[in-house]
Structure formats: C-alpha cells, structure tokens
Amino acid sequence: MGTIEGLIAALGEIAVETQPQKVRRRSRDFYWYSPILKRRLDHVTADLVITPANEAEVIASVRACHAHEVPLTVRGGGTGNYGQAMPLEGGAVLDLSEMNRVEEISLGRVRAQAGALISDIDGICQKHSGQELRLHPSTHKTGTIGGYIAGGSSGVGSITWGLLRDRGNILEARVITMEEEPRILELRGADIQKINHAYGTNGIITELAMPLAPAYRWCDLFLVFDDFMTSVRFADALSREDAILKKLVTPLAAPIGHDWLRPDLIAEGGHAVALMIADIAMDAFRDFLSRWPAEIVYERFAEDRLSSELPIFEYTWNHTTLHALRHDRTVTYLQTLFPAPDHVAKVEQMYRHFGDECPLHLEFVRFSGQIACFGLQVVRYTSDERLHAIIDHLNENGCPVFNPHACTLEEGGMKKVDPVQLEFKKEADPKGLLNPGKMIGWDNPDFDESGDRKFLYEEH
Ligand SMILES: Cc1cc2nc3c(=O)[nH]c(=O)nc-3n(C[C@H](O)[C@H](O)[C@H](O)COP(=O)(O)OP(=O)(O)OC[C@H]3O[C@@H](n4cnc5c(N)ncnc54)[C@H](O)[C@@H]3O)c2cc1C
Image 1 (cartoon, helix red, strand yellow):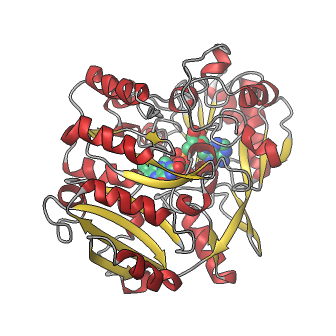
Image 2: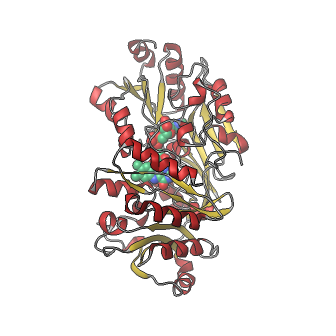
Image 3: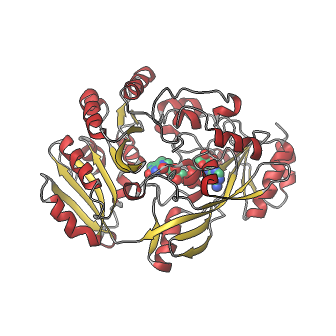
C-alpha cells in the first residue's frame, strides 16, 4: 500500500476527513446484525474519508488512489447488512453523499446521481409527475440509490416488480473505472449485471437511470390471524391476485408482531401480515379478504398516520430484525429463498422443524416470473455451530440461504464466482483496489460451493 500522506497531498482541494472517530463511524454498516461479523469486523476502519462534490472529483480521487495504491471502498448511506461497505484493508472510504442530484424525470424513468437518497428521489418524482421508484429497500429514508443497486437485491415493490436483477429494473449506470486513467462507462442492457450487486468491487457508480411506476396512495395494513400457516396461504393467494395492486405482502409469525413490532395492535400469540395496497384496489381487497379468518387491526394512509408511527414498510424486510434486536440483543437472522412452486409446503416444513428457535418472517415476491417467498427469519442465536447447522438444514432441504453472516459476494450470493463480474473487475480494477476482500473470485476464480442449489444471482 502507498502512503496516505502522499494520497492526501494529491487530493488537493477535495474534502478529506482523517479524524479517527469520524473515519471509523463512516467505515461501518449494519454488520453487527450478525454475531459472527460483529466479532470479525469490529476493528475495521479506513484511514481517511474522501467526499467528492462531483464526478470530476470522483475521477481525481480514483486517479490518486490508483497512483498511491490505496484501497478504496465506496459508501452510500452505510445501511448494508454484511459489512459490504466496510474497508477490510483500510485505505480510503469514498463517501458519495454529496452527489445527490436528481437529473431528469420523464414518463417511466428517472436519472439521478448515485448518492441521492431513495426517499428524496421518490419525493421529487412524486411531485414532478405522480411517479415513484418501482422498488425500494425498507431503508427508504437512509439508503442511496447507488448503494441499493451495488448492495441490495429486492424490497418493497418486489411482489409486483420482482428483483433488482430482473431485466428492466435498472435502466442505465454510469461507472468510473479504477485505472491509471479512469474511464467513464455508460452501461445498459445486459451490461448492467456487471455492477448490479457487486458491492462496488469493480467500478464506482456515479449515476443511475431507474424505471418509475405510478405513485398510488398506498394503504398500510396489519392483519392478524390465529394460525400462521393460514396467514401464509392467505399471503400466497393475495400475491396471485394480479389486479389487486400491492407493494408488500409480509407474514410475521408469533411472537414477532407482539414482542418486537406493535404490541399495541397485535395480541400475544397473534400471527401478523403487513400489507401495502393501492387505494383504488381497496374494495377488491376487502372482497378477497372476506373469505379469510383475519382481523384488520391497522389501516392507514400516509396522510392519516400519527407522527409517532412508522410507515408499515419500516416493520418489514431487514427492518423486522432491527426491531427484534432493539428488544433482544441475542437474536440474529437469516435470508432464505423458499422457491416456487412448493414454497408454501417448504415454509410449513421449516416452521414445524425450527419452531420458536427461528420465528418466521416471510416476504412474498415475484421470482423468475412466479410467486415465491423469502424468509428473513429471526434466529435465537446460541452458538456459531448451531447457526451453521440451521443454515445447513435449510440448504439441504431445498431452501437456499444467502448467508448474511459472511461479507463476500460469493458466500452471500450464488456460492460461486460470477464470471461476468470477475471479468469486468479484471478490466475495470486491474490492481484490485476497489473494496478488497469482498470478491473471493479475485483471489480464487475456481471457488464453487454451489452444489446443485438455486441461488439469487445466477444466470437467468
Ligand atoms: C434496516 C435495514 C433494512 C434494509 N432493507 C433492505 C431491503 O428491503 N432490500 C434490500 O435489498 N436491502 C435492504 N437492506 C440493505 C441496505 O439497506 C440496502 O442494500 C441499501 O439500499 C444500501 O444502500 P446504502 O446507500 O446504505 O449502501 P451502502 O451500505 O453504503 O453500500 C452498500 C454496498 O454498495 C457499495 N456502494 C455504495 N454506493 C456505491 C456506488 N455509488 N458505486 C459502487 N458501489 C457502491 C458499497 O461499497 C457497499 O458494498 C436493509 C438494511 C437495513 C440495515
């Protein structure tokens, strides 16, 4: 590694922070969700944070890091869950929060700088033309669009629009390479997959064009069921009602709703389902619901929400675990796919097998054109060995786990090297300076622990 002093001198007027506590704060993400990563990554910190004001400053920063051989890790909102944004080998964190402009909006499309907050993009698109992003993480307020595309996968809206990896869910990406003379690339079509969910290991995204959908008035609902599997069958049936516009279908087994989310609404033993339904679909939804043994315990549009209340999506996706952790620091979580077409049967099998050791939190989604569900189950952690035994049991029973207790792309994703992303890294980051340690394939291109399992980021 080159000298940090030399790098700072080369950065000239670009904003730099070296105060250790401030640098450390911006070297973290939500890695502490995992007791394993908490132990492994607690000491990790960068040497400095660079905050470019525009693309020219990004290019100058990259050129300087390349010349001084200093590793560089990009940071958006720092809400990643697996140490994705943590600089394992120190060096520089490139904080893109100042690059937050929405550049253009047209029918069905927005182009924004990568550091723009997702909620700001939605707010501006809503005001401009009654539109909003098709998908967003439950970190709507704090995540950036660049961080979502580089680190996220799915979220609120996935029940209608599928996952970020689905063709058409990311339109264009402007990317800066880590070379002696950095290049600016405009990626579109199949090339988007080079940088989608690559943790910023093979390029710095400075702008993105994303598809938009109509911004309906969304109704937040909590339902309560006496029986969990009935709530899962309800969620599956509702997910198949294509004409009932929805953004969220989230079953939450007891005790999640009562113990960790809304004890004021969800009685002890109640199995909750969180929903977002478009206002124009509410009559159809009520008709559908009348056939099911469920009670509506909460129903509100955003404008009626009390100032003390959260939007319902902040109880779902990775927020569910956050609420659980606030009450009980010993729990952790998993990310599992219950693949179609027998996802409901697989959910039942795992629900019966693990019981209260892994209270089930499901997110229904469109996956490869079919309805399926993810499990973001809460896990009552006892030891690393037991956690790995739980993961092994899920994998062996056809429910692949995207391991949130590892910080590499491969371990958290398809368990083998993604040749497209690796080839692009060879071209765009020949010295291996971008977010080092996150792509196993860089050091071991033959890594393959995939077996015959179906994973999230595989060719399709
Ligand atoms: C409470 C909670 C809820 C969440 N809910 C969801 C969810 O619903 N769906 C979901 O998919 N994820 C979810 N996540 C994970 C995370 O919030 C999302 O992935 C989020 O969008 C990340 O955005 P960020 O700006 O915070 O990214 P960061 O954490 O800053 O970065 C994420 C990764 O992307 C890289 N990166 C950031 N910006 C760039 C860039 N411009 N160019 C290249 N690389 C870059 C970083 O190096 C890092 O590897 C959640 C996390 C938490 C803690």
